[in-house]
Image (cartoon, rainbow, N blue to C red):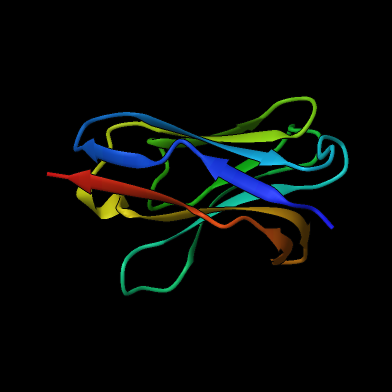
Length: 117
């Protein structure tokens, strides 16, 4: 069982930058692909970014490309950097681990990000 804990959310203003962290209860580097998803209020959860288990490949959703980036350390932490925040970035952001096909097997509880205009 892998437990994931997101942190770094909060209340921000448009134009701000933010870094979210996801700490896993086990080592994830070289073991699990990691991902970030978000769920805006009243909408479905959507893919944001993913990174391969060794960090040599990353994918970012077209809708946020250029403002969002994903990275990971060599142990158990995955990061999501967000620049030039927009009100439409308001969402609960979820970390995920262990990608199998298009699915992830482990999920965090989520971190709330609220962006005011």
